[in-house]
Length: 443
Figure 1: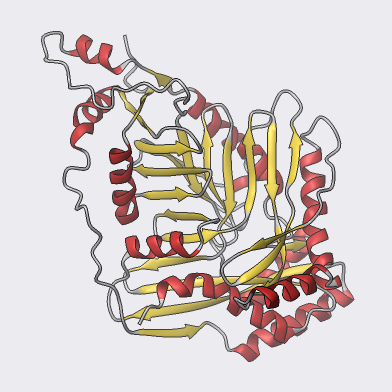
Figure 2: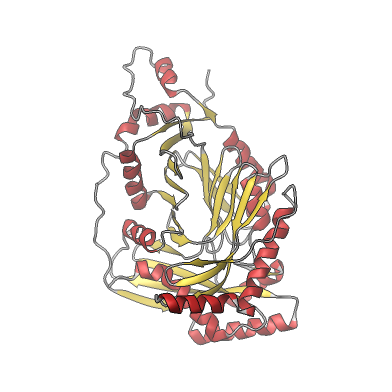
């Protein structure tokens, strides 16, 4: 007997053609998480959690993982025969079996809120098409038992009404408006530096918000295609109306192994090899940028050490070259002690890091509220997925925008410390905004 309130799932490999169709459909109206290591294209909602107290509600986070771990795998072909013994079996699609690949687990997806105790929503997609690096693509279906049977029967025709092309009609007239003037932002940086020099605050990340109004509705699929092309080393994402291309991995967990790759310290790129080398040399010799980066690395190492079986070794900073900027990046790795913490527990411990908030945390959050005057919502917050079993990957929602009809709202932040130059910080926000503007504004 099956429990009508119980969630079940089935999973199977799919063809490249089916996976490509899933990607095309998800770019238009689904959920997208896509980078070099993995791709997730998801549709529908099998179950949704509303976590009232956000990442600080550890019990609610535990319940999410418990619910996810409690989803039962079912042999859908056997169930088909049990539910209708005389029915003709549904044609098995994607029959090929791949011994070198492992079928993935069910997942939950979320784009959380920047403020740790703000309500967030995390959902189990009804259908998720996944591919991990070097593995064959697969589909996972999650639902109550009767729905799961319907999904199984209709799966072969799921993309039958999906147009094989992307509508190329895009806006061609744009109006850009900044929430505050440049002078307002310069004054905010000056005031933040004064606050740092007269209080316990050591660093605060301040963000600017701009709005783009277009003459017609933005084409979501085209925007995601552009972001994937412009920023191939980043995580291209779309969760609801929140889209972007994030370069910053907050935390990834695979079994006992964890990695976090924070960014702090930025300089422009010229596009000329020799000039870019000189600029990069200047970045890694900048006392200001190295100090800002050290704040972030030290914070993350301290937080993760509580979960690891031995002291985390300080990584050597590296350079991450993106389309128009170069960042200082560190890859912090560790091995978890048993029993292993789940990915949501690690996200809760880390967010918000000094890369998006500041240090000390509470003082920086107060300063952000004082100077920015508008909520960040998902900007700078964790977004990603958690798997049945506790593995998962979360990036930070930076280089991002909210796309609603013919309106795009963008934010970009910079780290302010004791010797920050207001003009330099304004320029850095403009560079970071270009990551999305290059995809959004195409006259």
